Image (tube, rainbow, N blue to C red):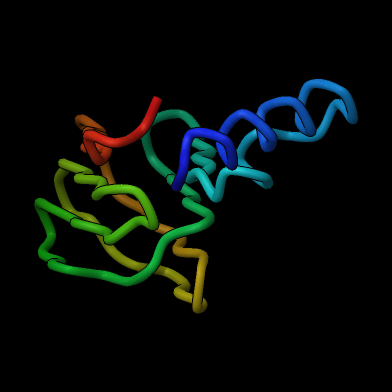
Length: 97
Protein backbone atom coordinates (compact mmCIF):
# COMPACT_ATOMS: atom_id res chain seq x y z
CA UNK A 1 0.00 0.00 0.00
CA UNK A 2 1.37 3.38 -0.91
CA UNK A 3 2.20 5.99 1.69
CA UNK A 4 -0.54 8.32 0.44
CA UNK A 5 -3.16 5.56 0.58
CA UNK A 6 -2.12 4.68 4.17
CA UNK A 7 -2.36 8.32 5.23
CA UNK A 8 -5.79 8.66 3.58
CA UNK A 9 -7.07 5.53 5.33
CA UNK A 10 -5.70 6.74 8.68
CA UNK A 11 -7.32 10.12 8.18
CA UNK A 12 -10.63 8.46 7.25
CA UNK A 13 -10.50 6.23 10.33
CA UNK A 14 -9.74 9.20 12.60
CA UNK A 15 -12.33 11.58 11.11
CA UNK A 16 -15.19 9.08 10.79
CA UNK A 17 -14.26 7.21 14.00
CA UNK A 18 -14.30 3.83 12.22
CA UNK A 19 -12.79 0.65 13.67
CA UNK A 20 -9.19 0.17 12.47
CA UNK A 21 -9.64 -3.59 11.94
CA UNK A 22 -12.39 -2.84 9.43
CA UNK A 23 -10.49 -0.27 7.39
CA UNK A 24 -7.04 -1.89 7.47
CA UNK A 25 -8.24 -5.53 7.21
CA UNK A 26 -6.59 -6.40 10.54
CA UNK A 27 -7.36 -9.58 12.49
CA UNK A 28 -9.81 -9.31 15.39
CA UNK A 29 -9.36 -11.79 18.23
CA UNK A 30 -11.76 -12.64 21.03
CA UNK A 31 -10.22 -14.82 23.76
CA UNK A 32 -12.54 -16.24 26.40
CA UNK A 33 -10.79 -17.47 29.53
CA UNK A 34 -7.87 -19.07 27.71
CA UNK A 35 -10.23 -21.83 26.51
CA UNK A 36 -11.98 -20.37 23.45
CA UNK A 37 -10.55 -18.20 20.68
CA UNK A 38 -12.53 -16.51 17.91
CA UNK A 39 -10.47 -15.00 15.07
CA UNK A 40 -11.93 -12.79 12.34
CA UNK A 41 -10.30 -11.55 9.10
CA UNK A 42 -8.04 -14.51 8.34
CA UNK A 43 -7.20 -15.69 4.82
CA UNK A 44 -6.87 -19.42 5.45
CA UNK A 45 -5.40 -22.15 7.60
CA UNK A 46 -1.73 -22.88 6.88
CA UNK A 47 -1.22 -25.61 9.50
CA UNK A 48 -3.34 -27.21 12.20
CA UNK A 49 -2.57 -29.75 14.92
CA UNK A 50 -3.82 -30.21 18.53
CA UNK A 51 -0.82 -28.07 19.63
CA UNK A 52 -0.65 -25.38 16.89
CA UNK A 53 -2.79 -23.36 14.52
CA UNK A 54 -1.15 -21.19 11.84
CA UNK A 55 -3.34 -18.74 9.93
CA UNK A 56 -2.62 -16.65 6.85
CA UNK A 57 -3.60 -13.00 7.26
CA UNK A 58 -3.80 -10.23 4.71
CA UNK A 59 -0.69 -8.68 6.35
CA UNK A 60 1.34 -11.59 7.75
CA UNK A 61 0.57 -14.70 9.76
CA UNK A 62 -0.73 -15.68 13.19
CA UNK A 63 0.35 -18.64 15.31
CA UNK A 64 -1.75 -20.02 18.15
CA UNK A 65 -0.08 -22.44 20.58
CA UNK A 66 -2.03 -24.64 22.93
CA UNK A 67 -3.07 -28.08 24.13
CA UNK A 68 -5.98 -30.08 22.81
CA UNK A 69 -6.88 -27.50 20.18
CA UNK A 70 -10.00 -28.24 18.14
CA UNK A 71 -11.47 -26.14 15.33
CA UNK A 72 -15.16 -25.92 16.27
CA UNK A 73 -16.21 -23.77 13.31
CA UNK A 74 -14.51 -22.36 10.25
CA UNK A 75 -15.90 -19.89 7.74
CA UNK A 76 -14.19 -18.08 4.84
CA UNK A 77 -12.81 -15.34 7.11
CA UNK A 78 -13.60 -16.56 10.65
CA UNK A 79 -12.39 -19.46 12.77
CA UNK A 80 -13.48 -20.62 16.23
CA UNK A 81 -10.99 -22.71 18.24
CA UNK A 82 -11.41 -24.46 21.60
CA UNK A 83 -8.76 -25.97 23.86
CA UNK A 84 -6.14 -24.61 26.22
CA UNK A 85 -4.68 -21.49 24.59
CA UNK A 86 -1.06 -21.01 25.73
CA UNK A 87 0.13 -18.30 23.36
CA UNK A 88 -0.69 -16.17 20.34
CA UNK A 89 1.96 -14.73 18.00
CA UNK A 90 1.29 -12.18 15.28
CA UNK A 91 3.91 -11.87 12.57
CA UNK A 92 3.10 -8.84 10.43
CA UNK A 93 4.70 -7.83 7.19
CA UNK A 94 7.57 -5.35 7.28
CA UNK A 95 5.80 -2.73 5.14
CA UNK A 96 3.20 -2.03 7.85
CA UNK A 97 3.42 1.24 9.72
